[in-house]
Length: 298
Image (spheres, rainbow, N blue to C red):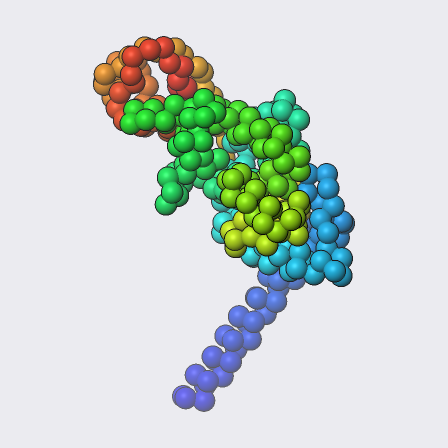
């Protein structure tokens, strides 16, 4: 009896292995991409940031190490990658439009991914907020209202325009796009002190604090991983359950609202939609004045 049972388990094991082999053969043969399609290839072309080649030849081995570290971290953190890929369509069109308006390189599309992974609920320990991770003081300089009732860092369109204006100002200061990105991370005064103390006028030769030293290379890694994604996005999007899309919305003008919950019910809207679409409204009220808000177009 024991011998028969052992033989039966052997048969089951052989059948199980056969099923596994058939599965992988099918994946390799019939899938438009095989399992390795989610492993991103190291870029074969010259690595560049904002139209400028990144120095990575023999004498600049540090830059290659910096890029490799960020590329491997980014391309292997699939959980994080898939989430910002899903969020990317929500924001890309407006960001690209504003980059063109302000004549800012397309590579700055990837900066907010490096900042926040396009999460709309990120607040740093220093109170930098939302997708562009504006500090409250900087946000106010560029025309955003930030107080206990309204925080326009959470207004995507307004914050994006403010970011473009900030990039433009930084470029007028540094005349180099890599330094603009570094200054966005480091603050311009800190970066300027580093440049002056080292007598260096380019990002790739500067000795910087770890976060800023990695920053441009993180953006570069995201850029090249995203480019690889674009080549196979239909397959990856199917694999991850599709990407996010905005609901059909319309803009309406409202005035002071003392109870947003009651107003939502009275006007046939879901309170949760109002809060999600207008995250810049911090509480349950809208202060005096005229305000444009997004609502679901039912």
